[in-house]
Length: 323
Image 1 (tube, rainbow, N blue to C red):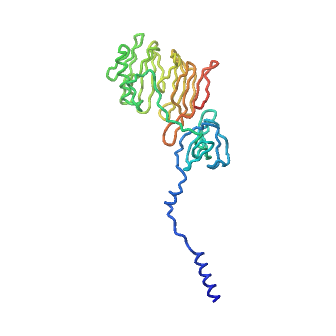
Image 2: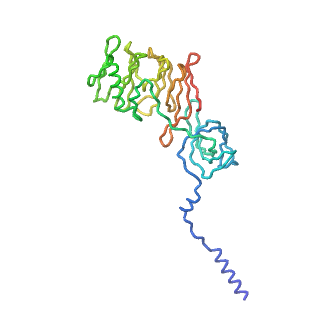
Image 3: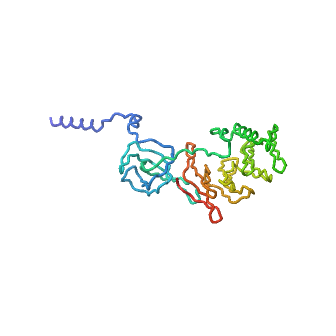
C-alpha cells in the first residue's frame, strides 16, 4: 500500500513539473501593456529649470539640471499621467539639442526623461512679410512662382510707366540721367527678368533674375545707375539708410548675411550663418532680430532662439537670446 501511494505521489509531482502553460497571444498582450506614444523628435523648450532624469520617475537618477529655454527633442511620451507639485503631466523621453557659441546645433545621443508640465512645444514658423510689396500680390506658399512675378511687374509698370516699360522680351528701366538699362529675356539659357519692386524713398528698382535653378535680385539705383546683386529681397532699416542681404541656402544659391549702405551699395559687415534663419526684423535703425530655425524630421522649420545684430561702438555685434 505504501508503495502504491509513493508511486501516485511521484506521478502527480511529475505531471506538475512538466505542465506547460497555454501560449499567450503576443499581439494582444502588447496592446494591453502599451506604455506610451512615440514622438517624431518634436521640438520643445523648457519653461523652468528642470531635472533631466535617467528614468521616468520622480525618484530617478538626475543626469543634469536643464536651464530654462533649453531646446529638447521629444521621442516618446509615457501613457500614464502623474501629478507633481500640483501639476498634472506625463513623463517624456527626450534628447538634448545643444547650441555652441557660434550658434550651431548639436543633437545629443544620450536620452533621458523630463516631466512635460514644464515644457512647451515650439510653434510652426510663419512666413515673413515684405512691407514694400503690394498686398494683392501675396500668394500663399508661392513666393517664387511665375504668377507672383507677373503680378508684381504689372502693378509697378502701370503705376510707374515713365520709369519702366515692357517690350515683349525686353524690360526697360529708365534712369534719372536719361540713360536706359535693358534686360533681355533669354529662354534658351533660361534667364528671365521681371520687375519686382520700385521704392521711391530711395529711388531704387528691384529686378528678379530667374534661372533654371536659382536666381538673384538686381538692385538698381535710378539716380546713379549703379547695380548690385542680392540673394533675396533686401530688408531695409526703418530710416532706409541700411539694407540687409540675407539667405540660408541649401542649393543653387549663396548662404550669407550682409549689411550694406543704401546710398552707395557699400558693404558694411558680413557673416556666413551656420544655421537656418528667418523673419528678419529691424527693431530700430541699429538693431536686427532674426529667428534661428531647427529642421525637424517631419520637414518643418521651427524657431529655437533669436540672434540679435546690434551696431554698437562703431561696429556690428551679435548676441543669442531664447524666446
